[in-house]
Image: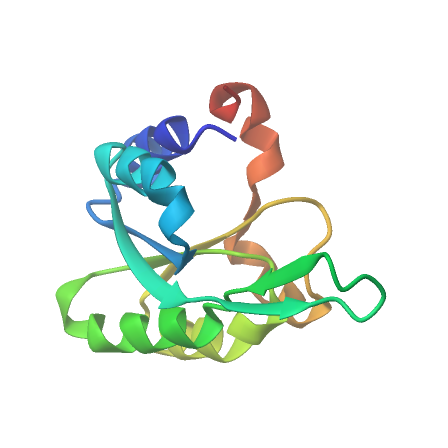
Length: 139
């Protein structure tokens, strides 16, 4: 997916004024972060954890789980937006979708592919499969 095209898509289709992207920070990825900023995203960084794999000590696993940051930031910014779009198919965001829907602030849940958490099925009226727009969003 081309992140610039995706940002334009969010603006054109859903009138998204601010698009936050939650991402683990790795110094070697500075060019990527610069590109994402130029593309119109507000980046929220989380430190990453590196651990060696048990099976192969030469390989390093990088983990930068941003779920809590996304939920927390959504709540901090709550008074500053009319509607929210969650871009994830992760069931960890069920409670956030539930809260936003209850407050009439859930616009859409954009899922990256056909498979997403069954916890989110309750929100089918809000769910849009990004894959439907593949041609518009590819590099």
